[in-house]
Length: 525
Ligand code: ADP
Image 1 (cartoon, rainbow, N blue to C red):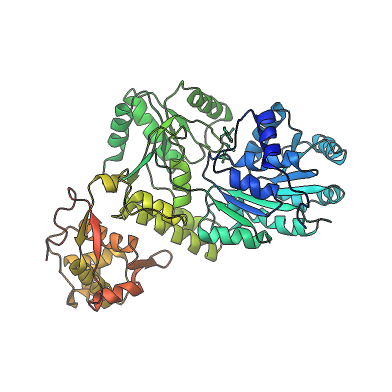
Image 2: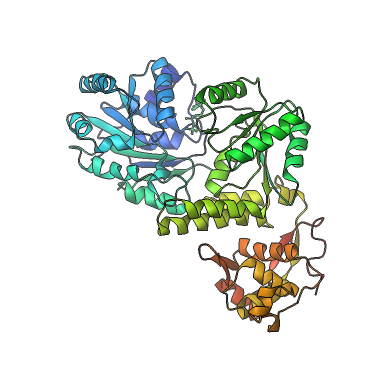
């Protein structure tokens, strides 16, 4: 059963002012708060910084019973609860960082109704002590933060989240259930509704577009020099440079330092002391640039970051958008550049390969990695690619990304498409991108010869193009869903159904081409 009473928005707005000092809910917050006040199960998908917490914190203050907030990050829990307590809200948290004496004390406080909001780690829901404690309490709402952790398709799957639904089902009275996340593809969204057993929920999706952010992918640059030049050209501006590994962070940091460019570094291999110092220096504008692994940024609320430079490609689009999205939180322009190199794909593939995940999970990770690679090769609008990835709708052009600004032209590439697809077909869809490119080039490579691929009619169709150019062409057909890259360790190029229409001459293929880089798409004819 859901909350029988419903509460007015005016009451909520008064509490928003009283406790948080804000005059009004943001337009994106309003429908979410309204659903909760009406006692409806709710899913809210809102970008980072949109103000998710307020959406459940204010209704929690109105509801007669307790609100449990399930949150995965122990470090953030303390910060959030401290901020609430400073604002005069009766809040506490329970997680494994507490001594058993401290936990006992809090349990006593909870039993004595001393709190309106209780943050708990999902692991706690399984503990007998906690279950028997809450079974005697009136719980009005369970708010699930970072709800994408429920789904295997999410970027941060946490098995402990699966304890939430049984926990709720075992409560004497079913509370209102609300789920919050910043990143949710349609698959994740469905998983959240199903795995939390939500009761015909209201689903609110706030637009994923961040119009003030400029997106660009650079391929084939000398990364170290590029990064140094970039930082110098943005002197005085706050920026984050993300690299894939500690080693990469250290190397780039040393390079910048040698060039007398002031920067800090951040990764899990440094002492707590050093990390805190660097983080604070960055927060308080004493340090403009941080070179970091993805360990940096969680819960950092710095609004004036002007650029996020990805020195390496991340493992999936969720991670990329979350990290890049740390630029321009204040609404002023921000730049999000990604420096692509094929080596990054090998690194990420290797990391998936050596991880302890099971085979099904690895397949999902590889599929997501491929979408990230597609982003790096798409000839289309980068913003549209990102927004559509998250299930949103986007115009075909934004005029504020590298691809749009390069002056995309629509070019008919049907003849190239037919050559490439027919080569893939003749190679029986059994080989990877490099080998397909070698055959199209007419390479004298040993492997090509030993497999008799030099006898195919598509051998040597592009003698003048470099292997890299041909590979880019293939990657683009993958990125635009004509070809698929399938299989684990050695993925092979396959034809998607729409490629057959092209082969049979029933459909034409057009692509947006960046003119200064690829002046003559079909020159090799
Ligand atoms: P999210 O969890 O969606 O990333 P937060 O809840 O951390 O976002 O909120 C981001 C920032 O916006 C915080 O500084 C918060 O205090 C502020 N904020 C939230 N709601 C409002 C509002 N209605 N008016 C003004 N500021 C708000």
